[in-house]
Image 1: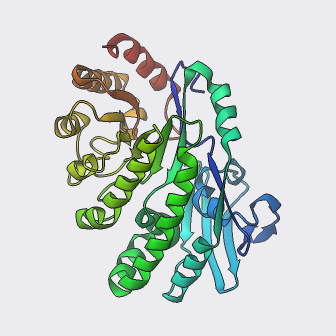
Image 2: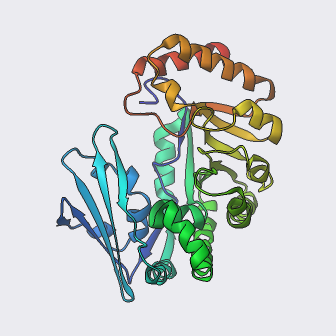
Length: 345
């Protein structure tokens, strides 16, 4: 689709540079309450918990419910999801962590992870894309974002952080150690770009939580990436106004998929003024613009963004996290024409 509309590709989800396996954790999948055997996934629970939202095999209108069951020697964790056909995506209905005792099970599961390189996947994707873009190797975000998005949800995470702080911080340390282990492999891959799947933004946590638990993680990630001569960007599709200076101080090379108003709470030109001209910024096309039926609004919005960002460079225009399923194709064609006309500097 990107090649069809002459859109340069930053492939962030199509290839992995590291694969995890867990010998002592058995992952089971139930589709519409019927168990489905996936031998290749049975000992790859992390993939099933993390990437289920991206997997084409689950994006099927015949699928009403998906349930995951992770069996370990110290206990069992379960979760459930629903597929929404109008949105063409999957939503998590039930999180894995439901009581304090579940924390130790998840900690065991992370301790049990082993990683191996999958560099051939990166090289195959690079050959496929050729001169039309770049392949990025993805790495897990901070343990905080994983706890919120995959295992607990916002409410339970906040309750558990304050009620069982030592337990959560012990889990955090284990998860972070494994993420670093994975990143060390990823950073040695052929991919020139690393993207941290952080979903950065204060809609999910407070600035204080970001500064205490997340910023230090990003700084260590940056050090590992730079040691291996890699550029590192952080996926930042959320509310950034109150943490943008802290983000810049983590020494990452930039932010990707940045959302402006109304989805975000700061415009890209204001971010640029705060972080300087050497910081890479990508995104800026809000979903509300992409789906707008009034092409005059789309045109006016995009021309302003391009003109705002041109003076300092280091900007790649793109979607602010995602392209909604009901985006008119004509809007994508129009945006490409506007980039050709106004986007060079």
